[in-house]
Image (cartoon, one colour):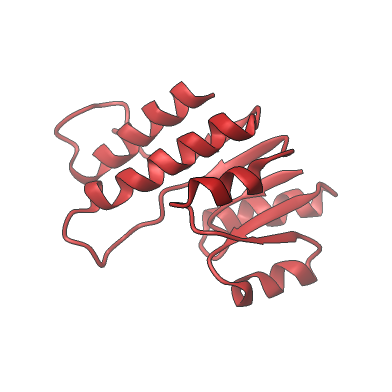
Length: 134
């Protein structure tokens, strides 16, 4: 079983569809049940959870062979880095507690640099937290 976040966007959707086409078991994470209905029809298991909820994401990741995770963009906040910090913390905690052995985090060029990259800094921080969790 593979757990995929971001299935209502571009990258997570492609990951989930590709795995399903290859006959893999897939569990998708969505924020509300309506978003999961098309995925149920495609044969995926649907988990409703907020990525900022470490306990819920831990449960979703439990028993998975791998996960595709991301920090959803938040264009509705003034400080994106501060808004994404608790999500990265929750994902790292969930990875650590669930024991999922393989994790892919959608990132960006420049995330390897700690300063001077603007909003990409949130991905730098998330990479470090998830790297330490696995």
